[in-house]
Each structure stands twice: as structure tokens, then as C-alpha cells.
Image 1 (cartoon, helix red, strand yellow):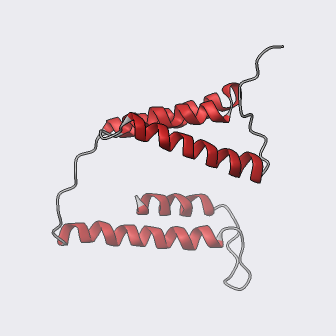
Image 2: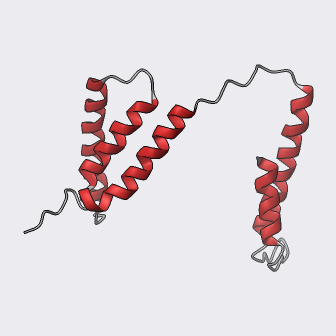
Image 3: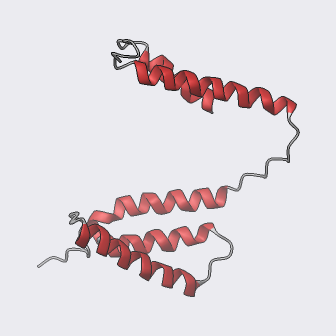
Length: 137
């Protein structure tokens, strides 16, 4: 993964002016960082053949599915139904990702996070999020 990302940045930065260490061009930082990431990826890859470690645990798709679904629902529902209900959907759907979720805990966490989000983002930072759905009339 490190090597792939590093090589991607090396590939993208090749069309920009490199510059020098004292007069950096737009390609300097992505090239140096991409090269370092590719080297780190190669080291990690080669060490994986030498170092004996524990087995990689199996990948469970249920948590991944429900977390991604809850984020997509939040992004889609934020404008039509408002921040409060969209956060409720986000937290309710993401609770299905775990196997130890209890309704009482999810409700308490939802109330606390909704209050925190409203106070920080709407009241404190004055972001223009609708709090509730707009009803006709």
C-alpha cells in the first residue's frame, strides 16, 4: 500500500517542475514524499518474508458495510432532514456494525453526540447546517 501510494505520487509529480532544495518547485514535495513512501513500502514488504508474526485476522464485511452505509446516508440526508435526524440515522445504522450494541447505550451516545455537534458546529462555528427538516408552509 505504501509503495503504491508513493509510486502514484511519483508518477503524478513527474509533469511538474522539480526545483531544488532551497527553491522548491511544485514537484519537489510529492516526489520526495512519494519516494520515501515507496522505500518504506519496499522495506515493509521485504521484512514480511523474514519476520515471523501472528496470522492476519479475517476481514469482516458487516462492520465495513454498515459504517459506509451510515456515512452515505448521513451525507445524503443532511440537507433534506437536517443535522439532528441525519446524525440519528448515522449513529443508528452504524450501531449495526458492532455485535455488542445495546439500544440504551446507542440512544445515550446519540443524544450526547447530537448535542455536542449542534453546539460545536451550528452554534460555535456557525456552520449553515439545517437542524430540522423544512416543512411546507
